Length: 192
Image (cartoon, rainbow, N blue to C red; front, side, top):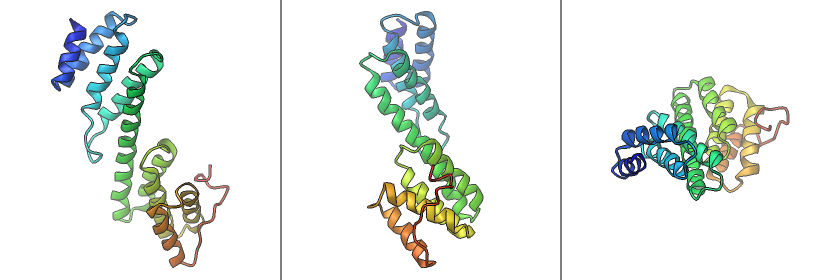
């Protein structure tokens, strides 16, 4: 009954009910043959609650947590590949939230706060769609602060990884306007 309640609630977008029923089932029957499916449904219910990156991303974090349990606890399950896809999407959302915050601060010329946000994207979410823009925005922020070594390094890392990117072209142009070129400083945190 709890498995069906979880399934039906998920299908009807009653996500909180699905999560509650699924967690109740998993607590009572953690190693049953349906536990992988129920854990997947709980993760799916969380993923359906993910909203635009300008809003709270708690659902994205909970999606990662729930779907990671599918991947780690039930590695031979048929739900693993979709769970991994949901994890990638949720990580991209979290990175997007950080990038969005960085943009906010950059627009207000609060460069240190912007750098902090873009640095989180680079260090915590390097395999997301947000990385190119984060590196370009780091170049822009460092350049605006007069930290040319860091700006050149950010642009060099961007160019090494995404040479055909418009973000790289923009960063290259920005550096050229000041008579600089992308150049990697091996001692920089970005190079690591």
